[in-house]
Image (cartoon, rainbow, N blue to C red; front, side, top):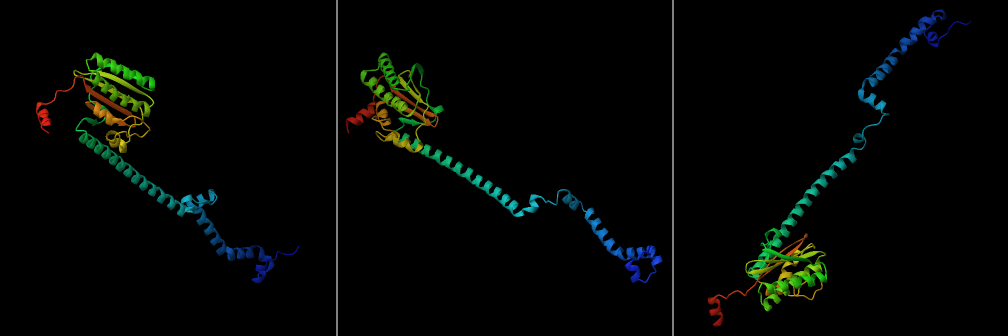
Length: 275
């Protein structure tokens, strides 16, 4: 058996008989700096918690670290959407205020032009109609005819003359016709006050649009749908007072007419005679 020969021992001129122990130590001593550096590197890697966590997770980083540009874009988009939502809410509030101002202006114009004879108001502000007498449904032509007949008969019983009762029937007929034409369901109620009869026509239609209010009340024959009636202008001439509330949930029209013609003011009669 040949003695153990180590190239490192030959290079260092160490006899073969002594090579087993000494040369191994020489080789180890010569490799010690390299091994120490390797151990220090491996130790430092194992010592970092973040790197150990990265090794456990397969070396993957979080999405925020992998895609910082996308995360920033997402945050900026959310902020922009929030700003746009605030602007939209503000615009809607301003539109609501503008619509309310338009309705208020129409009410003032109609009241001024009709000298208070036509009152455009809210449903809760419509005057109390008085003692209820009868009520009929007015969803079709049969209901329209029944309501007119009811009004005519009671007007005669209340002592209203033929001319005034005919005017009341015509005025109420226009309100009933509008309800039948523009709404699917409606009612016509007859009420009695001390010196007048009141007709209240209610429906569940979509109401009169604010931009159409002035024309619907003041323009003869105006209608958003084809009609042969004269509408509110005829009602104004044939009744003593009209109250109306309209909106998206329906319309209420209340027509009032005195049982007996009102007495003329002597001063007004004297002025009219001299004109």
